[in-house]
Length: 118
Image 1 (cartoon, rainbow, N blue to C red):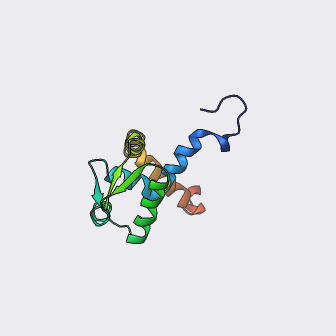
Image 2 (image 1 turned 45 degrees about the vertical axis):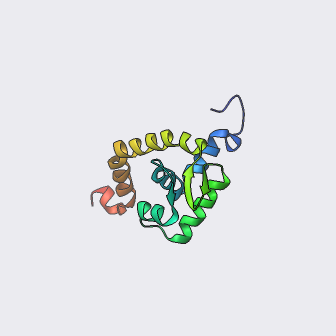
Image 3 (image 1 turned 120 degrees about the vertical axis):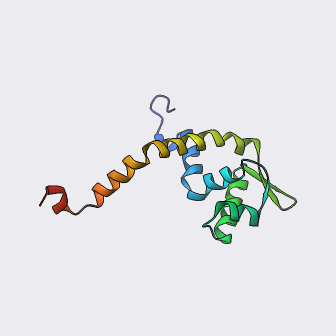
């Protein structure tokens, strides 16, 4: 939370949001929730990700202290495990409200004539 007149851009909450704003960060963390995986196993579990992008993601997560690499396997650190709860909450929110978001997107994408009923 932001105390007093602190600038939102400097808020600690932004750190968490930045960590989860990359599409693949949360996905990779979630894929590792049951235990360590090799790069190829992780790529199979994640799906639809190139080896290069997965490598970049894993390096970013390791840099931020969320995972470690030992004996060729990637595993969550205690800090990484601590993000699983928030990821699950966001996933639940998306499940509960995904239709509403898609409807809003459809309305925004509709031509002006459709919105006026012409």
